[in-house]
Length: 266
Ligand code: DGL
Image 1 (spheres, rainbow, N blue to C red):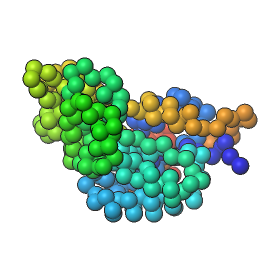
Image 2 (tube, protein in one colour):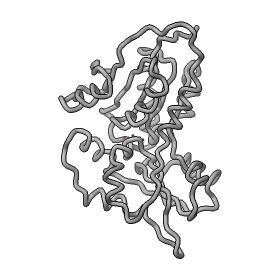
Image 3 (cartoon, helix red, strand yellow):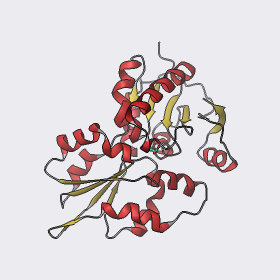
Image 4 (tube, rainbow, N blue to C red):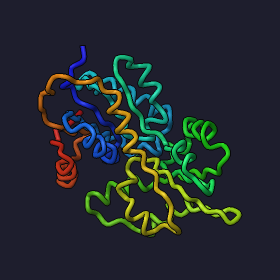
């Protein structure tokens, strides 16, 4: 039997999932959220696939047992493109919504036919990402840009630390492609951390582009999967849990500003 007061679980290696969560909150203000930060595993972008798969399946075994969520939102492209199918197979009693590069949406809207996908090195290497290109954007030029440092920079930036604009620029520039007088017109933000850097990206862009953030679409999908709820949902706190206890003041303040109480370890 569905318990409507069970939380919606958000999962990411870091703070990136908050870019999806803030959209979900608007659509589901009455719901309760648990946000799991695998800060011990951060960053996922450089993990070997087999190791990360095993790590995530083991971790989810623990998480699901403890929180029994109504729905799980894997608010991480690097994890979703690797284990979404495995999670559904391993835990058939739970529903999962993934976050994967918005290549289909970009293909629908590009005018120049030049699309860039800015992601972690893990996400650009995935067979899942290649399949998205083959299925939805094979007639276009898709530039995959794997950044080793931007997710970490987004973490630093939100904690109020100084970030080196020259490094960000160097990571961003390969997204801007010119071919036969045509220019990249859409850059897909395929890491949930990146929307936090959007103002910096806009400032550093070589020319105006559309920055595609699928957060809203993911939140809508999550909302659409929830069973209708006739009775009042019991109010409860939204909590954030971590896989390692590095909850310094800036992290606690950040999660607090998003309405979460930091509740300790997973
Ligand atoms: N936020 C994660 C994503 O969307 C990646 C961060 C990391 O490198 O762990 O891919």
